[in-house]
Every structure is written in structure tokens, then in C-alpha cells.
Image (cartoon, rainbow, N blue to C red):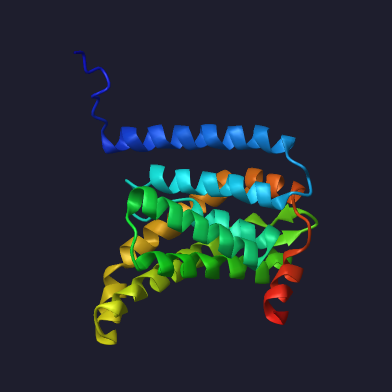
Length: 217
């Protein structure tokens, strides 16, 4: 029996292939969302969840580089903290259970990405003006969010060790924090404008109002 599919890719080839697949997903997203009802943000969030799961799995070979942080940040800006948290939970749970490995750290990942979504919602008025994303501000917050997310997830080690180990653990992970921050910068430059345009078309209320829902409830 022929085994034509047994092709070994170099790490660079694998990354290029995955970037190509993500680009196809983005193009498909751009085309498919136009068929959605403009007042149906939940359907848009479902599409973003599929995109986030696929992106996280495809970029898994690159340490700490994935588009989820930027996607959740944008969801916070456009749809508010509650929906961004729901999106973060779906992406983390499905991708971990299906492919990447599930455990207590999943809860910390949800908390980390939920915090990113909350930050996007809180600063939405500064990040989105007259329907236009302020990309330099989004990029800055995305880089800060990378470090915040990593540190929240890293705190999961406290489930097995004492607090004295946390600082050395965070210091050892600074290079991975940098990978995440630079990756977020690239994803903002690559994806923020087209995704933002799509999400704006399906935005029902300003995210500041959605944040107030969390506070009042």
C-alpha cells in the first residue's frame, strides 16, 4: 500500500502551512459572516470560537504564540465582558479537551482570557473611536495582555507548590512572555482590522454598557 501522506515537514514548513490554513479560515469568515443577521452577535461569537480553536491548535508548535488573546480582546471591545468571557471559556475548554490536554490549568486559562476580555471592554471607548480601531492602542494592550494572561495561568502552580516558587517560575517564563507579546503584535497587525470590521457589523450595544451589566448584576 502506498503511503503518500507520510510527509515530514520541517518546523518552518509546518508554520507556513498553518499560516496558510489560518488565512483561508479568515477569508471564509469574511465571506460567510455577510450572510448572518446583523443583529445576531451570538452567531458571530460562534464563528469566532471556531476560528480561535482552530488557530490555537494550528499554532501549537510555536511556543506561546496563538491568536486567542487578540480574538478575546476584540470580543471585549465590541461585545463586552460577559460575551468575551463566554468566548474564552468555549475556546479553552474545547481546544484543551479535544487536542491540547485538559486539567486544572484550563480554569486559569479561562480566567486569564476572561481578564483580557474585561480589559478590552473597560477600555473600549479608547480603543474604538467612531467605529475605527485605534490599532496602536490595541497592539499595546494586546502585548500587556500577553504577560497578564501568562502570569495568571502560571499561578496555577500554586495548586501543587507553595508561593515561594512563584517568582522564580515567572522569571523563568519571561522568554515565553516575550513570545506571546510579539505574537500578539503580529496578530493585531494581521487580523485586528478585518475581524474588527466584521464584529462591528454585528455589534448590538457598546461594550461599556455590557460591562455595566456585570457591575449591576
